[in-house]
Structure formats: structure tokens, C-alpha cells
Length: 286
Image 1 (spheres, helix red, strand yellow):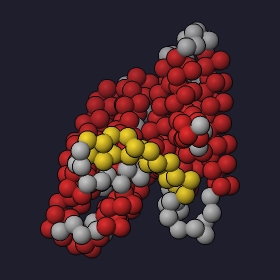
Image 2 (spheres, rainbow, N blue to C red; image 1 turned 90 degrees about the horizontal axis):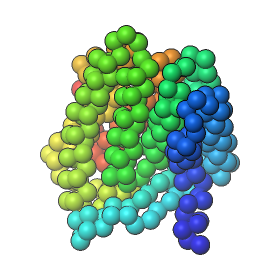
Image 3 (cartoon, rainbow, N blue to C red; image 1 turned 30 degrees about the vertical axis):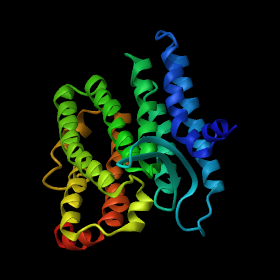
Image 4 (cartoon, helix red, strand yellow; image 1 turned 180 degrees about the vertical axis):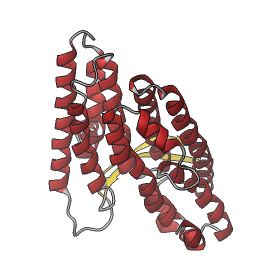
């Protein structure tokens, strides 16, 4: 019963329903293009409907996380205490709604534009939606990182396969830039989680106590990943290529949601976990 309640929770359905759609599409004959398109639309619209249910359950008067999903995940000794932790708050709710609204619009815009490998195209789009929703709802650093990297793979293929004439260059540039920043963030996440004994974002924010000098290094490691995604100068050169070469629907999601992941990361993690470093670097960030 507990497992059933866990799987049927609103946030779990919102995050993983698109991925379920991607799995279903894998079993459809690739020649049935219209069926594949309609199924992708149905799963994306159903996810939007679920997000409206989530909105109805959300109480804006209550601070902190709501509709939380929390379960033990990876625990090794006292150093690795990783939980599967999803939660909704005022910072994430509008971004979740934006994501679930834009996705069916983007899929509809691809209806006649994409004729080759329609099955793979829709699978990658639904995978991308799960990744973006997971980023906005994760309250465990390790889980957040998994979803963060998960968004990279489908977007890489969407640009590299269905993009313009210079798509391979644009896709590789997007991949390498994003991966470079992500590696630095991963190192910081591992240090922070092991040193503090938890990867829980609410616990880390409430506990504080990180040495100001160490905060600066951690701030920079996280900022590298987020600044590339925003993107901020001088780490922005991947964006013009990606926007120009991506398919139209890919550009919609790139501009509408993916670029907001970086700004969200600054607000969710850098400000909350490294307040002293945020104050120190404020003039530079401005």
C-alpha cells in the first residue's frame, strides 16, 4: 500500500508520466506516425492536466515544500545519505506549469514539420519533459543532478538529428559546454553531501555553518553549471548555434524552459546554500 501511495502521488505522476509515454511509444511501429504523434500529444496534455491538479492542491499561504515525496534511496554508511525527495513550493510551481503547458504546444508545432524518425523524436521530447520537471521538483542534490544531466541527452539528439545543416557542430558544442559545467557541480555536490552527511536541500539550507571560504568555492562550482545554462557572458557562445540549428519545437523548449534551469539553480541552490558567498559575489554577478 505504501508503494502504491508513493507511485500514485501527484508529483510522481507529474514527473514520470511523460517518461511512461516515451516507454509506450517504444512499442509502437515506427510506420504508424499519426498514432505516435497523437499518443505524444495525449501524454503531454495529460501531464498538463496533472499539473493543474497539483496547482489545485497547492496552498500559496503555506511556506516551504508541499505534496512532498520522500523515500530512502542510496545509503552507504554515514557519508552517503541520498533520498528520493520531490517537493513543490512557490519557486517551482510556476515553472512546472510553464513546462507542462509548452510541451504539448511544441509537439503540435512539430506535427507536419517532422516526417523522419517521428517515433524517436517524440520519445526524446517526452524524456526531456520528465528531465525538466525533475529538475524543478528535486529537493535532494544528487537526485537534482541526475535530472539535470538527464535533460542533456534528449536535447543533444533533438539538435543533432533534426536540426539544421550545421546541427552536429551545434549539438556537440551544447553538449560539451553543459557537461563541463556539470562536472564541476558534481564535485561540489559530492563534497557537500559527504561533508554534511546529507544531500537534502532543505536540511542543508537550514543547517548552514559552511565555512565562508569554502562557500565561495562551492558557489563557483555550482555557478559554472548554472551560468552556462542561463547563459551568462562569456559562457554564452553555444546558445546562438543551438537556437539556429535546433528544430522549431526544440528552440521553443530551449528558450521557454531549458534556459530557465540556470536561473532557477542560482535561486534554489546558490542563494539558499551559500548566502555568504552570494553576498560576496553579488557585484560580479550583477
